[in-house]
Amino acid sequence: MAHKEKNNRQERGFLRITINGKTITCSGINIVISNGKVIVDGKTIQECNSGDIKVTIEGDVNKIDCGGSVEVHGNSGSIDCGGSCEVSGDVKGDIDAGGSETCGNVSGDIDAGGSVRCRR
Picture (cartoon, rainbow, N blue to C red):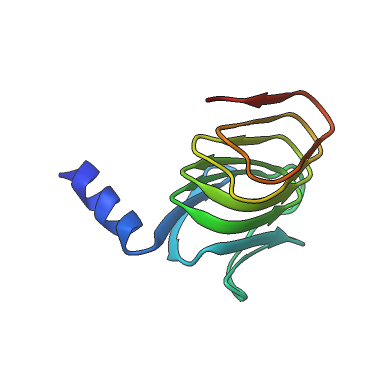
């Protein structure tokens, strides 16, 4: 039942965002994490401690801008992150990662400070 509920939330545009172990559920497709704030579609939804930030997103997103590392369980549009980037699905845009990058197909450019691995 929990699996069915999770899929229904994602179909209706809900995301699960985990930042340094704390999970929030919200709707939206554009995510910015900057200066200790989580901003979804232009609205601040959460404040978090600054420092090393590890973000995990469950669901499809349009754009991600994050100073730390990001992991997406779904598809994504453009990604700009200061750390490593891992996407289980495809990226329909550019990736600019300060660390390594792992994802499915990418329709845009990749700029990574570390290794790049694209799964097929």
